[in-house]
Length: 337
Image 1 (cartoon, rainbow, N blue to C red):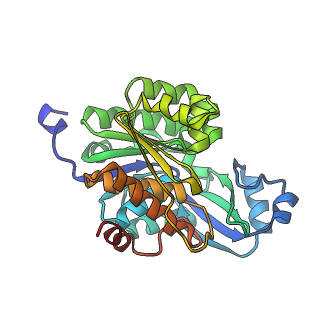
Image 2 (cartoon, helix red, strand yellow; image 1 turned 90 degrees about the vertical axis):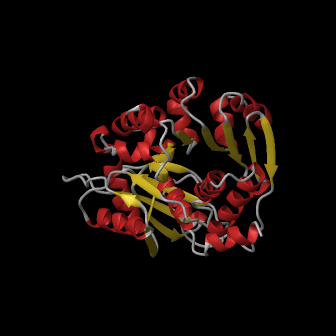
């Protein structure tokens, strides 16, 4: 990169790297979870055999492209942002479905599909009547994203590189994301990171803290449990304060208790947005990140960023699935009128 290129204006708003997953959602009850020894409200990784067996036992389901970072991009695209996605699918039926869905949203997706017998990833999601979702994820092809598949020019062209913590677990994507961070930071771009889940933090806490301590993360997204796990502090306020001292922007969601952001040492709080009925909490954190980032890109206040994040999360939990159904642009315009 030349000096002039490194300070050029971005041509994309956000490029995300994440698991390319097809979500399979079904209504369930506690008895089904108990029968299959599933921890309610949790997320576990499963192998191909369990994925096949659980899928066979699941009630009638809805299938749609998903994955945490891809969900966030769907929200950003709905809010008018230009986006690109990097993730690995197989050259199979679900891989074709995923690619079509993402591109239909106007998101650039050019990662070559892999061939062979490792199928496209899928997440089997069981939603109980209390709207809790229990996720069983077969990572399949998504965990074999190689560094060679990165479009470094696209990464350098985006104002923000958004990374999904779930994808830090497998070795190949972890190496790819490290290379992507180097490319983004070399081009003077921001790096946003979402912690994703406590099990990821437990396995890679040292890596995450090292990235943070070396100034590689500009915007850190978490929920209440994740930030406490990362800091290894049981008190939420103390955990947030500890980690916020190390990153320019820290955002932590707290479900019905709203969300907290600490930006350059200043703390901001916002309530959860009202929702008539919670149907399915899948994707709430992903869409919160989308709303927050969209307002951030627009240069709005931290309070506005939190408010749009909360509004986007409220929309997605009011129906099945992790993608927005109502027009987020209308919701934004109403919110900021």
